[in-house]
Figure (cartoon, rainbow, N blue to C red):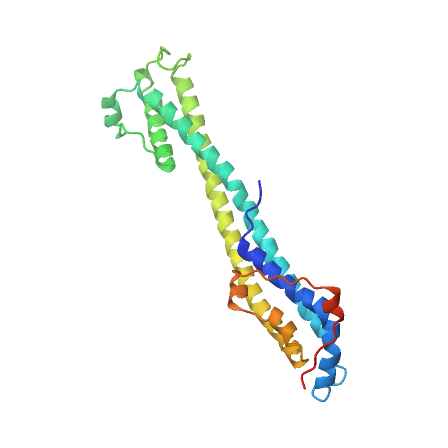
Length: 256
C-alpha cells in the first residue's frame, strides 16, 4: 500500500532542497564578494563559509525530522483500513449470530430482561446488547430451543454461549484495535504538525538570512530564488531550482 505522504510536506522538502542546493552551488561564489563588502564590519576570522554550511545543515536536519514524522503518520494511517475492515466483519458476524439466537428466545423473555427486540447498529452498543443476551442465556438455559433446526448445526445452550462469547470478544478486540490505532494516529498527527511548525520557523529564518547575504553580495537573482514567500511557507507552492554548472561558476554581479 502506498503511503499517503502529504503534498504539503513534499513541497516543504522540495523548498528546503532548493535552499540547501543554492548554498552548495553558490555559497562559495558569494562568500568572496560578501567578505570583501563586509570586511570592515565583521570580527576578524569570521567564517562565512561555516555559517553558510551550518545554516544549510540546520535546515536539512529540521526538514528530515519533519519528513520522518510525516512518514510515521502515513504508516499509522496505512494500517487503519485493515483494522476497520476487521471491525466491520466482526459486527456483521455478531449481528447475524444474535439474530439467530433471538429466533429461539421469546420476546416476552427479552422484554423481561430489558432487552430491546431491535438489534443496535452501533458497534459498542452491539457488544453491550450481546452481553445482555449472554446473561439471559446463562440464567435461563432451559428456554433455549436446542433442536438445531434453526441454527443448521448441532448445538446446546453451552455451545451457544461459547460461540456468542467468542463473537463478542472478537468485536471487542477489533474495537480496541481501532481505538488504539486512532489514538496512535492522533499522537503521530500532533508530532507531525509540531515538526511542520518547526520547519516553517526554521525555513523562514534560514532562507531570510541567506537571501540577505546574497543581497549584500549583489546577487539579487540568487536571493529571489530562495526568499521566503507565503506560498512556500504554507506548502502550496513547489518551486525547485535545478542548479547547473553555469550557475555554479557564474561570476557574481556586484552592485555598484
